[in-house]
Length: 194
Image (cartoon, rainbow, N blue to C red; front, side, top):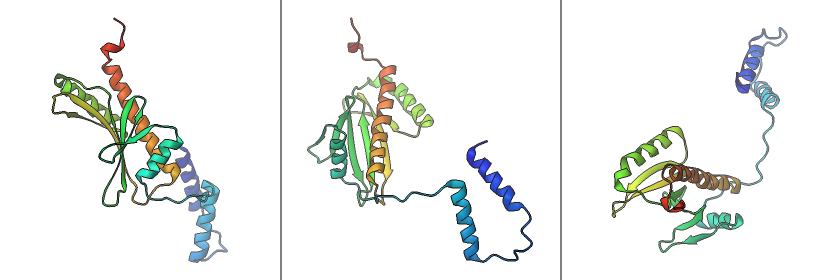
């Protein structure tokens, strides 16, 4: 039985006991104080945040990249990108107020169109078993199959530096996990000795 379930049962058992005969009624303030005291006793106190969420911007993402010693670039369209473990990732902000952060990675290889069905099966299996990243395949104009990893988060109310860092690391690391699985499934023939 989980920790929370045990605590809830213990609390419910104590709450169902016969009330003290001397207590006839409890006003709202006293009831609030009792509930607050119970929550502190059972769950502990919450620590006050030392930073407040602020809007995410390309400058904040670039600053995070610099702080973590990652190389990055801004392409001709003004999009921020970088290489992570030899794979290309972009960092987009979408929405009316640029409130949706998307970390999008591209697998560094392409596959023949004849493998499209099996790549789609791999992506569907990945998406069914994992929350991140969303995996999908696209067919380029040249007929080659391109695999993409994507983590998108709505940050309408902003993010603290710690939250932003966690989201960016999540996008990069889970995207790399997908690409590692692709590398394992489709080893690079030029990477092996003849």
